[in-house]
Each structure stands twice: as C-alpha cells, then as structure tokens.
Length: 295
Image 1 (cartoon, helix red, strand yellow):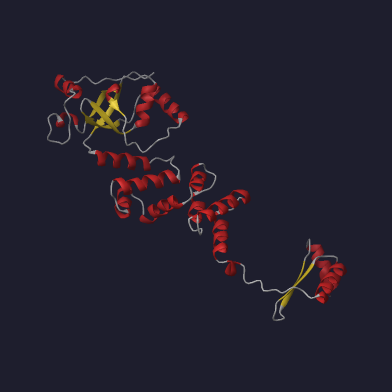
Image 2 (image 1 turned 120 degrees about the vertical axis):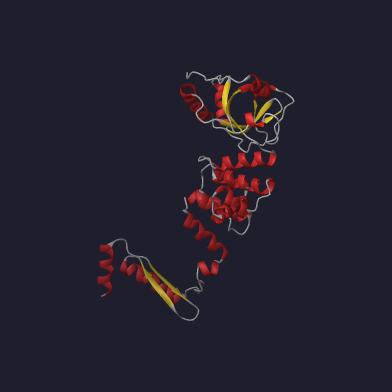
C-alpha cells in the first residue's frame, strides 16, 4: 500500500478547517486566502458527498480497480470541494472519494474552491459529461439538467462544454423516445443513431414497433431510417402497385411458361394495359439455359 502522505497544517489553518461555525462563501471571508485555491490533505471523515451528484450508478468493478490503483499509487488527482461549516462538500471526484474510503485512507488530497449551489451543480454536471463511459441517454439527461436547473440556453451550454449546438440538440431529442427505447440505448441494444432515427417515428407506438423490428431483423441505422420513411410515405416508398388481378387467360399463360421453362414466371399487368414479366433463375448456368430457350 502506498504510504499515505499527510501535510502538516499550521495551527491557524488546522483550526480553520475544523471550525464548525466557519463557512467560506467569498474570497473576502476570514481564512479564504489560506484555503481557497490550495490543495490540502483533508480528514476523509470531514468530506461529505454532493447532494446534487448527477451520477447515480457507480460500476463496482471499476470502483474496485480504482481502489487497487489508490492502494498502489495513492490518490493522484485531488478531489474538488467547497467548505460548508466544519465539513467539505464534494464538487467532483466522488469515485476517488469512495475508493479512498474503501481502502481505508484517513486523509485525501483536495482542492478547495468557492462555489454556490448553482455553480456546484454546474461543475458536477459538466464533469459528468466529460466522462468517457456515459451512454447517450445519460448525456442527454445531463444536458437537460443544465438547461432546467442552471437555466442555460442550448447555445450557452454548447459554449460551456465545447460541443456544437447541433450535437447538443441531437442528444436532447433522444429524451423524446419512449422509456423502453431509451433503456435499449442505455443497455447497448441499439445505438444512438438508431435512437435518432426513431425520434422521427409518427408516435410512441410506432417507435416501439420499429424498435422491435430493429432487434428482430438486426436493422442498420440506414435501414431503420428507410423503414420509418416508408411507414410515413407508403405510396412514395412503395410506388403505387396498381397491378390488377390477372385474367384467367393471363394466369394460364403464366403457368404454361413456368412449366415450359422450368422456372418461376410472374406476370404483372396494370389497369392501363402496361405490365411486365419476370423470369427467375437460380444461377449463371440456369440463366444461360433460359436464354437459350428464349432464343
């Protein structure tokens, strides 16, 4: 286990960190200069979780791997906190905090900064977005929280997180999907691309219907888009099949040709007299055989 480092605190700073009545809300408050912007070794029992933590699920295996790393190397990247009374509230770094508790550390390096409740939530949300293991729905929900709780416009949010506004919009549109479809994206059953295509379905029932077909037929995103478009415009997707029932004479000819050429022959005829005849073949050799018969 890596040797745990403890910074020796000056008598004044030590008292400041444990003062139950002392709260730092601005750079002008007593002790702000000594604490803010510094990395200090905090008693881990003085750290309390962020009540607005956007992340609700922590992968036990990933947490165990991080704990093993901390056992070996210690906490490399400090957590970020703000001082609230005698405690320090987490702004970011809850995985590091939990893993440090798991391995039994008594102190943890922390960067102390000013943050009101809105700023704290925004920092936690933005840090959450930057994680690589988020699924598309988690990202969309985080974007929505930034809009609802921090009162950011899509334009302001795209600037804060460094993403194009169109990217933000595409994620937010996923929240229009039926909860079952959203779960499918979160579980990796379908991709975000499939989800974006499903947003274009006529209604939630249509979404579910197409979603089930994606799974059953292993449809690609492009095939999904085509299926939804075909359902919206059946006449355009399947140009008016205006063929009329064949007369008995036509049926007889169709049967005779099929028997004569030993292959399937299909005749289609429209109401205006136009039509087509389709001759099936099973291989290049079969095609040549039929060609010779026609000649």
